[in-house]
Image (tube, rainbow, N blue to C red; front, side, top):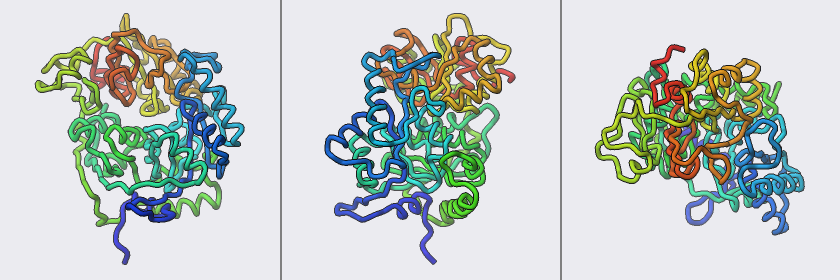
Length: 460
């Protein structure tokens, strides 16, 4: 009998084209995604070198990072010079013959939301994009990770990348989540307990009963933040929920091909007895809604907790809190729901359930930015947009928006924001912005209260 292998090993080994000197492997790449922030640079550089895209049907591009999210948008952006990124990427994508989801395309959205919606990511495939949150798509049992522009060029020209094989780690969430606790809270708890560098050099597989119980959108949230754990990627073995999600998606196999694919996908699970280089276990029942308090996701605490007494000085200076200060009750100026972490339909549903019949506190600026135009349409079909607007939220078009500050839209300097995004680095949402990251439910509850609040205290 062959030695038991991990999910990661099965996918990696199937994609090794050659073993190279120095311990690296040449790995085949199945899907490549670009966006307007770096897409034109990669495509134009490749063209200047006289190298065509080897297989244009495997390369996709979307406008998401710097597009305006206000209704009626066009190529113009609030970011100085941003329009050139869009127009140049459009021209380069068309010239290369790759699939483009343009500003006004009904399928436009954030890369890591659009790809699963359309079935571009599939179990067992390798997928790359010049964005660190590409690991989101590991939720489908894929090997997906972020790259740089030069790597994108190499992959487009050759269909391969040179990579050193990472170590493996399994993070097992046992038990059940308490009501009101979400996948976002699971990841913030993991990172708070084991550090923002806890997964460095590893491909992380998430497993356990609490992970198996999550729907696909919750699993995407979990894998999305693997990069905040410094992991090369995050992965979850595909199961019946995965197969049901992919059934009927545009780029997924259908009919007899789907049945054959599912039979193959079922083999993509870690074998009993397979060894990992590291293991972490967390009882899901011990997790409560989490909120960050500093400059890294590892600076997070439960909503009933407080800033650590021994907290470092710089994060405290940034966030404007003191050692031992309770997290709950901190006044906020703004609330943001969106991003590739928490801008999907289920995220909007849960937030809207808390907001229905309630209103944002006076003086709080609140925005909701769906993760894709498909999410926006589905939310509007359910009337979620009216719930948000009646509660005092702005209802926007899809995009990265104020998750990623690139010199465009921002909250007023000095604002304290509670946000469903994935990063609370200094300046992540704009100069002088103090960001607390949390689940969409915690953002909604806090917007209503005008202060950081526990969503469990609000009856949906």
